[in-house]
Length: 310
Image (cartoon, rainbow, N blue to C red; front, side):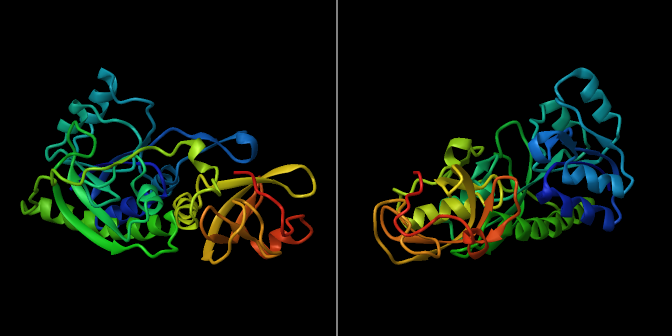
C-alpha cells in the first residue's frame, strides 16, 4: 500500500522499519523538527524516526503545524492510501485525517480506553498496572477515541521500567500494524467502538512530578521511579560532599526498613519512605552516564543518617 508515516520517538521507529520491510510504498515520513539536545542543549538533534528515514532514503517532512492550507495540500498531494501514525506529537486536523483513501491508523501504546493521551506507557507503569498492550485504531477528531481494529496484551512486571515496556510494545505494535495493513489491503480490516467505561487520560509528564517525594509509600515511589525511567527520570537532591547535587534514579528495589522519609538507612543506598524503604540500584548524575549505586557511592558522602530532599 502507499503509506504516509507519521511518528517521532523510538517507539515509532520499529514500525517504520517493519512497514518498509513488508514492501509498502512509504511516500514520505512526517516527524517533529530537530530539537535542542546534547550537553547544555547546544546542538539540534533529529528524532529517531528522522534518523531512520534518512537511512532508508525516504523523504522527511518536519512541519511545526499541519493546520495551514499549504500543509494540508502538500499532504494530500502525496496520494497516500493510508496514513500510519505512532506517537507523532502533532494534532492532525480533520482534512489530514480524511485525505488518505482509508483514513489514518494510529498505533497506541495502551489498552484503550485506558490511558488515552500523550504518555500512556509511562502512566501505566506509574499507576502500577499489571497489564497493558497496544492497539490499532482509526483516528478521528477526539483524543484517542476512534474505533479499534486490532489489539495485543502483555503483562507488566513489578520492576519493569517504562523504557523496557516501551521497547516491548514497539516491537509488538510493529507486527500488529503490519497485520492491520495486510487486512486493510484485502478489505478485511474491521473496527469496533471503544468501551464507554474505564476511560482514563495519560497527561503529558510534568517536570514537577519527577521529584521523588520520600513521604510516599515505598510502593508508590518505586512505581514513579520506574515509570519515569529512563526519561525524563525521577530525581532527588542531596549534599554529596561538594554541594547540593541532583541525581536521577533509574532503578530501585523494594525492601524492608523504616525511618524518617528520605533518610539513608545504610551505606549501600537504602532510603526510608513514608511506609517501607527503597534500595537505590541504578542512578545517573547530571550530565553523566547511568551507573550502579555501588559506583555512585564511591567517594561520595551518602552515609547512614543523611537526608535526601523530598
